[in-house]
View 1 (cartoon, rainbow, N blue to C red):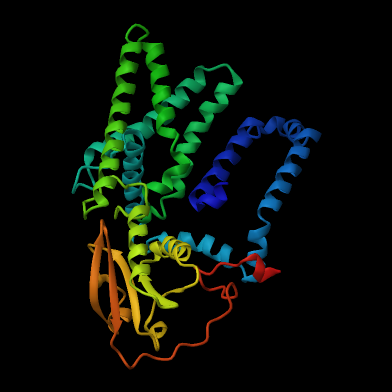
View 2 (tube, rainbow, N blue to C red):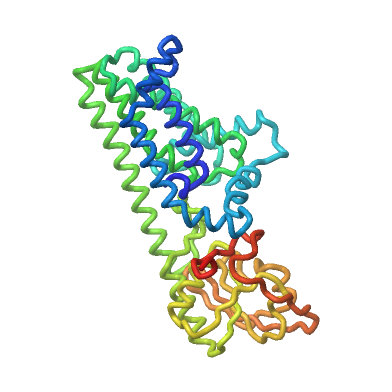
Length: 388
């Protein structure tokens, strides 16, 4: 599941569970290594291991076939994500410092639903809170681990420091490209840290622990309830106008685009053209949802998404869908140089523009390759019909 979700989740959870595995089976006790290996490679565990491999093989069959047919495009994109997000113009120390800041802000965001005050990306409040939480989590885990006698609880407490530390180490090289959604592998961690802190309170201050715990939990709940309310308010306002979006932090973009706005945009496009072949320009992240809605609305039309001037060859009309802030000025240069804006309509945060091709020097396009055969394209998808 992690490998399908995000490469951060894939590598971090493999590393975390691997270290936990070595600890659980006492691989660090070198004097008893032979004896412990016999326990690990017992009949029951080997059966479980083979079953796990079989499940992985079955569920990964489409990925394996796709890579064989496309010269390993999935694998190349997977490992290429690291180099794409890594900043070669930054030193290791700069990346390390940035990672401390990003990790701290993420811990604050996960706990309270707030990231930073407006205009203060290096806000000292979330950074201090986050760094204190990480340090507290590691310290309390080690402290309680030493005092704990039950094996199951010791295992859990061992898990916390490696969970925090390994994910931190993994994200150093890409610290300048981190987004809140990349921190899904550590979403439970801040709340577990709070739980460990409440356990410590109960041991140190048994009489005041209940009151203090109630205040802490109430504060966290109220902050999250308020943040959630603000998110819904923004979503509501974004249906009727362009608003500043501070609460869509977990998404790739903070433009506040919703399904309702896309549906209105699609309704407008289909009502204003009867052509069988319609060109549409939009940002890369909007392409798939818009294409899906357009096909659902009018399946008989050939909806073709334009990305360069060659695709405008011998066409008369094209629609563009963009944010209000971006507008026509943000339409890719290769398209805007050969078109003029006829009219535009606003739907919340979205602007739908009808363009007219006004250039006669558009080069003839090369013949399209078969779907799924172009291994260099990240947007191409291989379907079962291409295999069978």
